[in-house]
Amino acid sequence: MEQPTLTGRLLVATPMLSEPEFRRSVVFVIDDDDTEGTLGVIVNRPSELLVDDVLGDWSGYATDPAVMFAGGPVGTGSGLALGMPGTDDAPLGWRPLSNLDEDATVPRLGLIDLDTPPEILGGALGRFRVFAGYTGWSEGQLDAEIEEGAWYVLPALAEDVFSPTPDSLWSRVLRRQGGDLALVSTFPDDPTLN
Image (tube, rainbow, N blue to C red; front, top):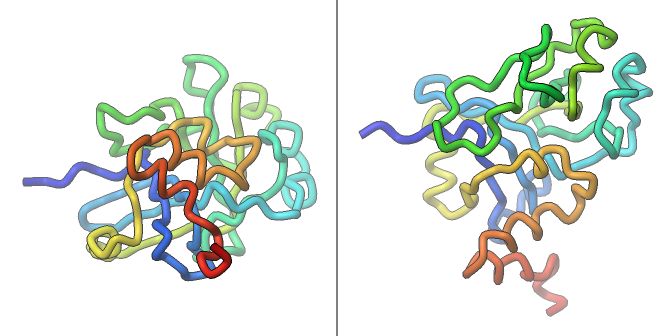
């Protein structure tokens, strides 16, 4: 039986995941393919670098906080942008995520071609965020990490990707799940201080 795609879902780090790059991270999965692997961006790691300092022409369209986000440890010298059109039309320079399940909760979220002139695309966007770097797993690697208990796979909301308060996103996403995961959301950042 074919596994459902993770595209459009969140990977939320469990408390056991202590690697500095992924500790308490919330990853939005951009693409999950059986043969190519999985690609995503960490959506709760804002940097202090303003979008204006890197992509000045795009800065007026960035969703608050209008900073670059550390999308992951791979390809940190390149930028990747996500956006949602402000209308039902698909604007030039915006590409919807492919490979989404029919029950995905982010059907209007897509990739932005940063080579498109912002004056053409920017005004058509309702939300826009830029990430430096991304996360990536080869075929089968992420499945093994999920089985080991490193990640919770949860539904994503557009508000997760474009949160105005990304620093508290890990707790908020877990809390809204209810049950045991709501309890995990209260897990202390440093258990030795408990």
